[in-house]
Image (cartoon, rainbow over all chains, first blue to last red; front, side):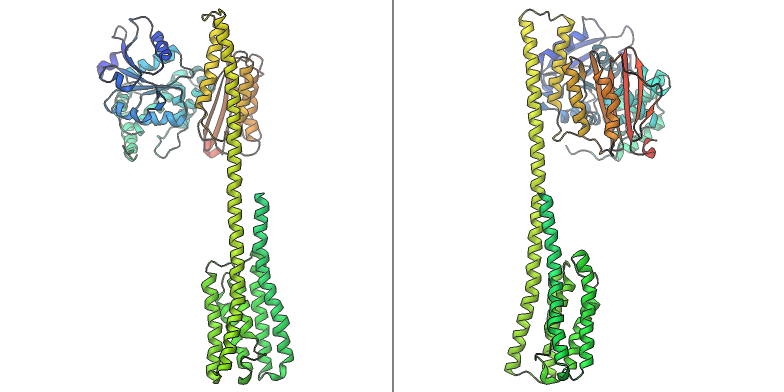
Length: 238
Length: 377
């Protein structure tokens, strides 16, 4: 865990990424985003199916949800159970889909619609370090969750998430809410951590929670409260 | 169409119920009153007979009210049924024994119509009416036994009147029930057909709309490919922007899933397409499946300011809709330089709050509706 935390430190090894994507044009695009090696992120494996990259050790698995016409939402849980950090990379940004993959243990969801090189790299680095990261589709999905076992977000946290989804930047959210940008980040990150704690258990979520406590974002007793909430969540039949 | 069928079904229910009342009233005034007055001398206790006639009229009046109002019998019928059978006994008692089953013995054939009115439209009408008519038949049989009139002629007479009365009374009730049931079935069927029609029409509209948009995108793609074939530079930012915009529109079409578009979504889509026709690059994350129903005027207030921002976008815009059961938020971020903005939130009478913000060459217009102040806390 500690080693992973060091992965993004200056001078550290690049974050390794395996990509599951069935469109060559996207593979090429991602490869170009990762840039000339050595960069902060290195693509170590790539294939059109999950099986094609299985057995490869990578810090992060970047997963397209629609592979050859089949949605692989139900495979996310099995991937995360092994402790693999999974980032879903898809155009299916509907809140319902985003919530389904986050519940299954995915660390993040990047919407293909408006992903940029910078935002994509930032998300990968944060996830590799087990730090909370919230992309706009995730902000929308978490803020509008009305299911019975949803985490209890504060009004400010929900507001920050919604504004982050709907505005142009965290700076504009800060201006809108009349607070510092750092506080906006804190609200959003706390909401993400609460969300991870309230969902079904997965090793990837545990790593995120441990790091959130290490970073002082939440107190250990807060996690206890939310995991007890999670315990009431019925397990989905496999 | 559905409305007409519903009206017909309602009329069936109403007029068959009133029909039962009319038959009872005509019978009571035409036959019962005539024999009560013309046969006055034949009665052993004519005043008791008159009292029974009046009691019949009272039970009739009590049963008529709910029948006229709701096309169904009274909610409590036990006491009324007992009163009806009691007046049957009273008429038998008022007659001399040799008049039993005679022309002046009006009540035992007539109370059955009161029974029809009492059980009208009740869920257990079959059992109740059978019990009532059986009680009436048993009373007469008991009277015949008590007075010793059980000869073949008397029994035949008894059977004729009983079978005739029950056939008419039960038959009318049964027939009307069938008529009402069929009319209600017709209503259910008509509603289902209307819903199917609406769904088909809507699906057809969506399909046509999507075909139209596919065709539009195909034209754009064809033009772009032609330009590239003619030597357009793929490195040219303008060409790249055009390609990206085309890909975005195509992607949005692929991810659209709703069968019946929400009115707010439809209105927004129209403006998004208009912006795209002006070569504005519009990004629109999927709207999700759930949008709550909005009170009057809210949709217009939610859309007005964001749509203005979108309409004036120069080269790019991002349109987002967030919704929960108690909240809908519509936002547009666009490079609209001319949009006049308010530095304080604008509160519309419908409860929609609109906020504006300018930053880094972009304007962010966000309108939010919340169901109640409690929900927005």
